[in-house]
Image (cartoon, rainbow, N blue to C red):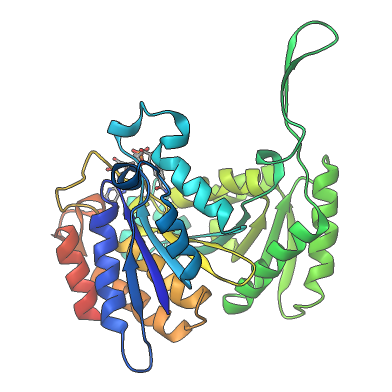
Length: 354
Ligand code: NAD
């Protein structure tokens, strides 16, 4: 397995280094893992004048999977937009056609107090949002701001999905449901939107290939409500780009801890980029206090979704569970009575548990 490691900026290098410890420890005769580092984001701009240097893109293309830390920093905020760190991220997603975004929201029972919801509502929560990432309102043409016939400015965007775009992400959703609780809830707004009507039809067609998965449908407004009312009813939520953008942020906050959640963005062949959902956290960078568990759990997702190595993914996830069970906490998830440790020490603790 050739893995490109793109640490990025801020706490990115600190948290990526902990995931690299885990991946390096897994290397064996049976599991040959080759890691190669490259610069992205602000680090890419500093090194090569481009947030996605050509050499980094080439490495990412050649790799079987990519591990990303995070990008961004105050010092880059005044650069022209194409040179800003976030553009590196958007470009790599587009260049590699990473159309399926997987965002789990799971909560360890020990961390239930970190959520703003009642512990009994969220304790044991374990859901996965599969969001389409390269279509919908964010990319649909025509788009723009023009002056209309009445002489006033008018903004417009186009919500559109082709059958093939829906089908390929639906397949990913069903395949993930097969690896989990075999329940998939497709979220759209078919009562109002034709795009959603088509989405629903294609999802129903695709479902025929996955008879074991129980398929349900929900309108997005209801889904937003159900996520805070009874989030444990969900296993896999499949949805489009804009609905997924909003619902996945809502779902991540159910767990209360941005430092615990990983993500994956996959292409047609299951090649993927794996990254924590948090940003570069410049406010705590360089202090060895960031939580590396989101990045370590992203590496577990890589084993599961790009390499099909469920047992290796389970080992990593169980090591994280064990460390949480031992009462070890970084500052962001610390509560009195637990033991506060730093970023590198957390990486070492997971390594020891592994
Ligand atoms: P952020 O996620 O970086 O930080 C939000 C808050 O959460 C901060 O208080 C931070 O200290 C804390 N936090 C984040 N990750 C943590 C961790 N692992 N452990 C402990 N605490 C953690 O979001 P922001 O402050 O809005 O953005 C900072 C920079 O990151 C910006 O430049 C932004 O553009 C960028 N960003 C990048 C990504 C990405 O790389 N995918 C995502 C979001 C934001």
